[in-house]
Amino acid sequence: MITLTNVGSSYDAIAASRGLGIQDIDFTGVTQVIFRVRVNKVGSGTQSWQLWNETDGAEIARIDDAAAAGDNKSLVTTVNVALTGIKTVRVRAKSTISADDPVFYGASLLTVV
Image 1 (cartoon, rainbow, N blue to C red):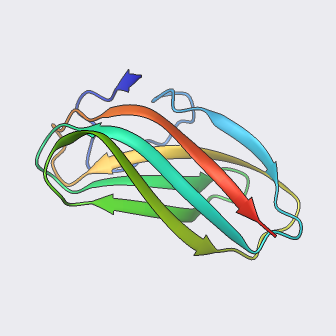
Image 2: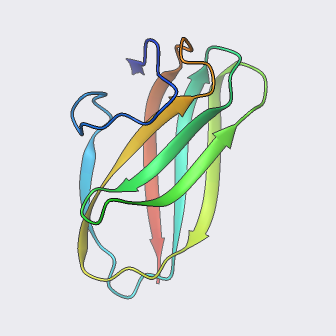
Image 3: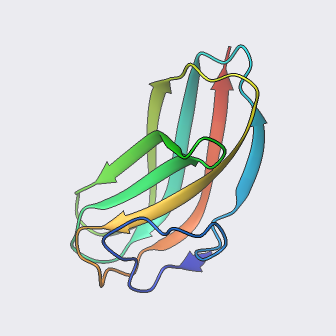
């Protein structure tokens, strides 16, 4: 569990700065990804949770949560992808209210071939 104090209104620029972890994934043959985050939304802004392709510097998926605050929220999105090879990915966060303090419980990524 990681509390992101003053999450900020832009995604963090340094991989280790938020401690949300990195993972190497072989996307060869993958057609879709199912990206899920579990959070405690603390704050009133629209909080965005992004699956970031660190290797290519590009967004793979994003979940925008504009709903009310709440604990143990399971947010999920499915996106089509056209990636090949091993990519380093990580989760990043931001909010329209830079003082929001969400709690990040974890994330998962399911690849579909």
